[in-house]
Length: 210
Picture 1 (cartoon, rainbow, N blue to C red):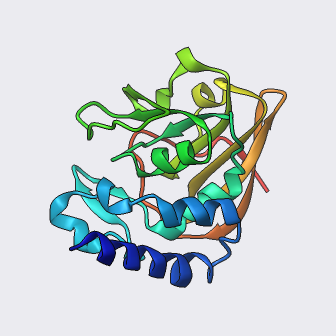
Picture 2: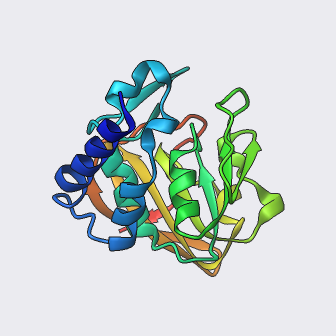
């Protein structure tokens, strides 16, 4: 497909998926309209780039649908200069969006994942649940997928007042959640049920939700 075709598809994604589904942060809409998602999708799956479904990457991993990424970005309320710990970097799409918002991004992905070369993004290889303690403390924890647990190891890498966005699996239902770390404790609000790709290596939920 041509660059113009991808650009048209990206515009359609913004208008039909984001604006109609509670992604109303104009900064988020602007970066998602600007960053070429197709550059972060395997060549054999680029026809799927802008559909409202997860894109399989192999090895049990997948890219979240654009709407999921948009909702996470909206709830994260990233400001220029924020230090963001991104868990589940995959091919680097969310990392690129966060960097476009002005964040200093530390992106964690398992060994053997795709190479990521995005300005403003530091890639750390290792278990997703371990995070990247060498770069702590972080202002935002952005978990780009659904987990059954937000581990204490990740919470301990966050500054007091840090914002957290994630998907939580609760009795088979995946919910978009957002909250903060106050006094070393994580509190999460459940916002909406949403289809989100699962991330490996996380156990049962320990975070307080309400």
